[in-house]
Structures are given as structure tokens and as C-alpha cells.
Amino acid sequence: MLFVGALLVWAVTLPFDRNGRILHLYSCFWAQLYFYVNPLWHLKVDGREHLPWKGAAVLVSNHESLGDILVLFGLYRPFKWVSKASNFNLPLIGWNMRFNRYVPLVRGDKASIAKMMAQCEYWLSRGVPILMFPEGTRSSDGNVKPFKDGAFVLAMKQRCPVIPVVLTGTARTLPKHGLVLDTTARCHVQVMPPVDPSAFEDVPALREHVRNLIISEKARIEAQTRDASGA
Image (cartoon, rainbow, N blue to C red; front, side):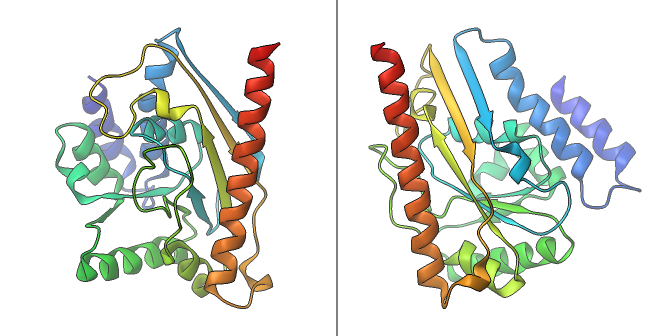
């Protein structure tokens, strides 16, 4: 039923919504239904005011589980995902990703990476934000892995801000190599203020600055959560 709804939204809005913002927001609602109907899953989103409704931006987030996808749809702001190409072949969900014109990527494939970068540049040039996981793959232990350059190359080339997004608690939804959904989860999304790439000399400096911001904020939130649980 939800896919049929997406198909109808796509067909009705395509003539006047060439960037697919309305269909994306419908997809946000679709993903958030998993939280709305599950009383044991809780999601808190802070800092949403840092996200643009219009205008180029590169959103970068740490990556803990497949549940990150559901959680980040809770941002309820227009953006294009960069996602594994294999996800686009999934029944219903993958088809909806194609309708949304999200950006596929085959990790390690140079031709695919070049095509992905070109598609991201296209969307940014149209004032549509993109969202990437700069770690490239999910973390198996919750620690933030080294970042790849792609997101930061795009931000510098397009002269648009990088917006760090910090996820905590999502590993309990569906961890890497996990087979079942956890019964309870308290997920938190913290959107941090935009980072201006023009303040940095090169891509590595920008990349490491953003990574350190995410690591520090993630540690702060997790410590706060532990203290609250102990209390």
C-alpha cells in the first residue's frame, strides 16, 4: 500500500516537482512509520534547524546499522541519498529509491564512483542537498571509521557547506551482520551547525575536522545517555 502511495505521489508531482522533494518527504513518512507504530523504538532529532529546505549542502553521517536509513529519513528535509547500488534492486523499497532518483554506488568500482560524483554534482547544482556516509560502510563496533574523501571533494568543488550528522543508538535496530531487529531502541540524531569548506586549505583538513566533530559529539551524547540511565 505504501509503495502504491509512492507511485501515485511520483506520477502526480513529477510535472511540477522536478527535484522530487514531495516524493522524498512521503518516503520520510513511510520510513518513520516503523517508529510511529513500534512503542519500543524511540527517535529524538535535535538541530533540524541547521538543515536547508533549499540550497546545496553535503550532509555527512556516521554509520552504525541498516537502521540508520530509517532514522535519517526522520530529518524530514529534502536530500538525495548516496546508497549501495544493490539496494536499488530490492522489491518495493528499491523501486521507490529509483523513483526518488537517489544516487547508486558500487563500492570500489572506479566507474561507479565517477558516475556517483557526477550525479551528486548535478543535484547540488540544482540546489538539492545530498547525504553520504563518508565511512563507506557500517561500523561493526560503534567506533567512527576513517572517512573517505568524496563528500568533502564535492563540498569544496561546489562551494557548499558540510553538515555533520551524529547518530547514536541505531546499532540496536539492526547491527552489521545482524539478522533480526532488536526489540527496543533509543535512537538520537544530532544535526550540527554547517561547516564552511572555504575555511580549510584542502580536502584532508576539512575531512578530519568534520570527523573529529562527529566523534566528539557522539561521545558527548553517549556519555549523557549513560549518565541518565545510571540516574
